[in-house]
Length: 283
Image 1 (cartoon, rainbow, N blue to C red):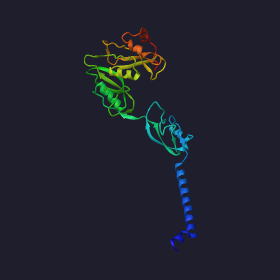
Image 2: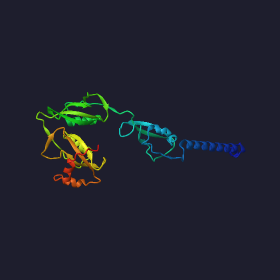
Image 3: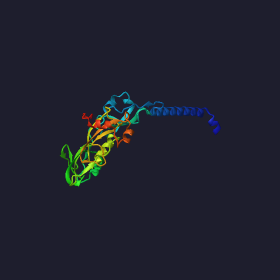
Image 4: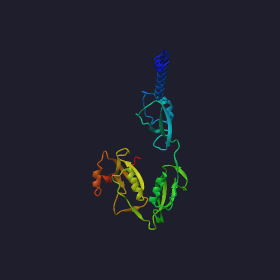
């Protein structure tokens, strides 16, 4: 039998037809499996999980649509312990069902850091070391000592705290510093128009303490700036180191601070009235 006769025979044609059908079935099964695996054409929108507690995820309406993985935990006392603060993918993203969602939650226990050794450092150096360690400078107390503005002692809740002691991150550490042999004084910086954060740093850098704070517009927010201070700023006036500085805050949404800054040398008469009032501050 020659090749032409074989290719046109019923046996060959029958086997060829069976092979084509078998190949088609295999391709259909393969494509169906791929679509099933990738869930082709099925997309879902990622809901917002931030703000929920980690324990609420299992009972969420979309709990079965995703695989949740907690990748990190942070400590932040502005949020509840166990609260979800970050997610990836972000809310609103379109993904396939079964997508992994990575969550960052607030640690249930505060982060602990080691207390650095601040003794004999200058105030500026001590403040920087506290920031590096995740701590903050608290109340400054001054004693007569030849080492002006050098740290003589570091305290927590009135007790000396030894270097290496583990404390909660963000803790305020009180410092005892030297005044110099002649009980040297310091000048009060001008704080008008500053935010509370800026004013706090300026007060600390001037070897002074933050006093009470009063919010004249009834609330505390990012729009608040220093409207008045006591002691007031005077280029030639000196005060004891460690003196508390009282602040009165107003919202820039209700007050023109540009005009206030232009009148620093000739402050409005109403400022004297504000400063001399003995109202309890709104903390």
